[in-house]
Amino acid sequence: MEDKLSSVAKSFAPSPIQELSHLAQRCNAINLAEGFPDFPAPSHIKSAAISAIHSDFNQYRHAPGICDLLANIMKQIHGLDVNPLTDIAICCGQSEALAAAAFAIIDKGDEVVLFDPCYETYEGCIKMAGGVPVYVALDPPQWTLDPNKFINSFTGRTKAVVLNSPHNPTGKVFTKDELEIIAGECRTRNCLAITDEVYEHITFNSEKHISLASFPGMQERTIITSSLSKTFSVTGWRVGWAIAPAFIASAIRNIHTKLTDSAPAPFQEAALTALGSPPEYFESLRSDYESRRDYIVNLLTRVGFKIQFKPQGALFLFAELPENCKLSDVDYVKMLIQTAGVVAVPGCGFFHTHLSREKFSLGGYSYQERYIRFAFCKSDQTLASAAKRLGELIDATGCLNPQ
Image (cartoon, rainbow, N blue to C red; front, side):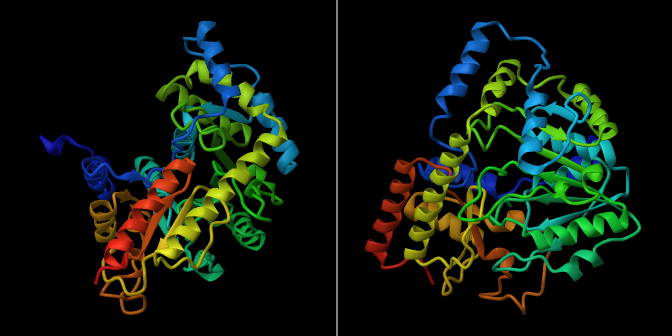
């Protein structure tokens, strides 16, 4: 009966992450793999959600006021004039917003440019819409954008570019010069852009998030997607949005209605409180995550990982395997689970381009098999426990670098 599956469904294979998740559960491993916090959400928005439930906001709902708050935020932060009545679609998280955006603009055979490595959901959405992903490899270890690679990825079939900044999995914040190149090519080629800006408020040191839509001529061709999830530590609440030109936002709303009808009603009410949070909340968010980033960078450096790029934003450290380690990323993660009781994500699941093994080789592995993603959106206790386990393994064996 498998022949009854669609060609798209057949193209989606289980990832190594699923196998490793089962292994981690059996070994009671500390979870530094998944990108969601294990500490409480802010009390002020939890109280708002509880109040909404007690007030019986239980049915399909499109809460008035969210779009007004989002329009004000876009004006204050990015200088963009957004019409709250026509330019915003509230969705079930950023994932649905991006999927609905893909369904709204992509026809069969349209090509969509993505930057590699990247979050795997993008490819799935593009394929389900009938599009063809085209990957442009960012250059390690600083994950810089090569303008020639980017420009040469365009053809007459290119419909859009997908940009995630701050970036999962690397923690890169695209520079103003890189964004200028992306914007310039979109304008020249008359292409659209879909941005994933869920980490917009999580940047470190002097880095600032710049929305691609803020560049000249880009607001009219950019679909911004984001959500409450990362900024307010509520990844399970599923309240997100797309901000786009009115005709695209209207199409996204129509698709959203056909798919899920509405985001969870009580959490829409809580969104009104969350989006009205004072500036101090966002400064504290950055400061707390910057401390966690520094902790995990220092921890992994001490145990032998190569940290050539310190995350500039987001919630992840993309660490290169120790130089003398001859394991692949998948095998190394299995070893970490079984011997240290710590789980992370093999980097290969984020890569889609395959370059020469001769140029980037150690033990026969390409660089795409030499990175591991660690999530640092974890409590101090979780990070300290992970440090203790890794330290105990080093004390017992002398290294984390099996030959």
